[in-house]
Image (tube, rainbow, N blue to C red; front, side, top):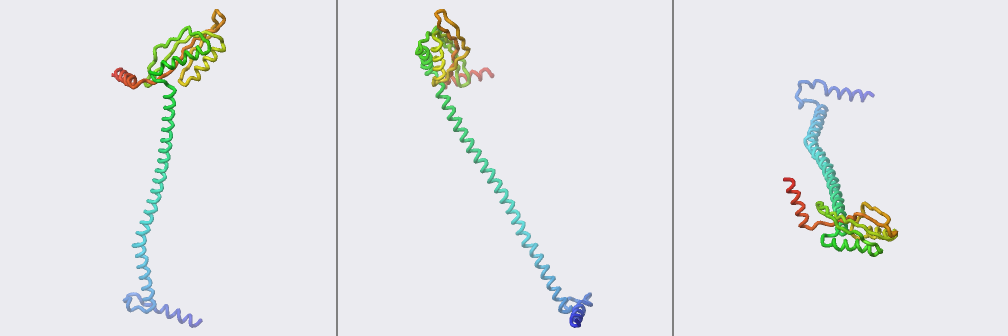
Length: 215
């Protein structure tokens, strides 16, 4: 215990009277502690100068990585959307081709009219009226109405209507009216409507007509 007291007294004595003295004249222990303090201060200053800049660079790199990840996700999403749009475009093109097959051209209209009459005569129906009326021209197609009046048995009229519905071309029966004839048969009156694509010259003429109206 006496040795500890003596050691404490020795240490404390080395720190007495340091004020006003040059550090080089300080006792050994204060000089060692001062040197250690200076060394630690140098280490701390070096850490701030060197490593803080590296930490800033690391933080900037992490932020850049996050930004690149977000950009990558966005581009992946855009790529997926583009693929979906391409698929939809292909589906629309396929649908348009299907419609083109269902709509005759101007040169094919005569055959379609023959198909309609054959659908009636094939079931022993008598055509009292078969009159293609003035077509209604739209932007890219024409609507062709046909006034029809046929006479025959009820079953044959039903088969005629079914055959019209099953034609490869689009034909609709509108304003249907059925009445009894004097000979005991039935008379069907209707306006059949079919549609055809306009020829390129007709499309151009239609556009030119609209342009003239705008002026």
